[in-house]
Length: 469
Image 1 (cartoon, rainbow, N blue to C red):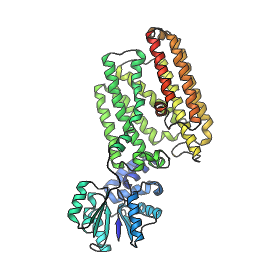
Image 2 (cartoon, rainbow, N blue to C red):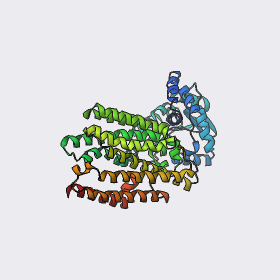
Image 3 (tube, rainbow, N blue to C red):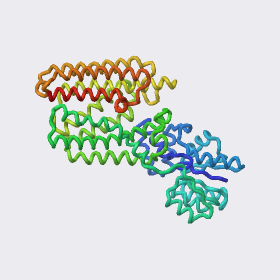
Image 4 (cartoon, one colour):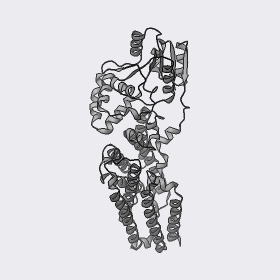
């Protein structure tokens, strides 16, 4: 009999964490019921989360090497059992999907089938040394000790050494080489481009003293750390939706290249360290960062499902970065900059939704998962993108003719070139999204698009020209 563990062995994930984030993403109030379930034991907690969660067994990240090993075993006439500390109903759903197991045993709400308890269960059912066991962690050592053969799956070297000391027959399966790249990818460092907005108040006011520069750099680092923590939180909440998406399913947590347990720790650690760094700026900046974190968390948990409110929230989260730069440097924001930011970022948020809806339409999905929109809403979303973008350019043209410009720029007329370039870029971005060629995020698309890069250089040239000529 070949006995196969589930979490970290058959799956590149842990179903306890999967169920928690699925339940939490569906209803944030489940956090309180989960806490109340803890005193009743781990098995009860697993049953509680299994009842509260909705996880699609078809979309889970399976270990192909383990599946191939099981198939080869079955082809040779062997029997296979799935025995796991995960809840029985979770294990049964996975077994029903795969159709490769002769027996399925999991925790039952009272007994946690793990470690020595699992070893005693397997000895009672199959006898001493009456089975091969495939596992991955130190918790499996008591099981390997009473198995005829031990099979490790992606186990650390320390675990493999202990297993070799316990068993005469040992086999190690390594599905992939460990690397730090998925962890870096999970931070989404390319999204840090948005955090450059904290430098906008300093640049707009033409204040380039050492204090303003140092405060802006520190604010950028704080925002990058906290934002990465938020992105990780969002990925954990969106596991099911990401796995149903042709590109997002390759994200580290959805693909199982980074354990969800690690992601849970990373999200908290990044937010904590980023908040700690705010002490070098001041408590006002800390308040702004707390507000940003609460808003993004509310967006991830609920607000992103509400039509119109979601794109307004995205625009607000962009604008908060500019406001944070203002607080960090003590530079007062002009009404012109705030008005431009609100409309311009509303346009970007609408373009983002437009791109998502067109992508969904091309895949035949009329209602994207986790969103409140239907594909039929595309014309309205496109109109919002164009209208908000054009209003932002209008605000800037009015600014060019305001008295404040004369004090800051030697040749304000050159700023008309900025307005014209922005008008072109916004129109083109909407057209690109309409054709289904836009990245999921227009900011990331702009960073990689050669035409957008040229537009950025033209805007920089006009801005420098207006300030220096």
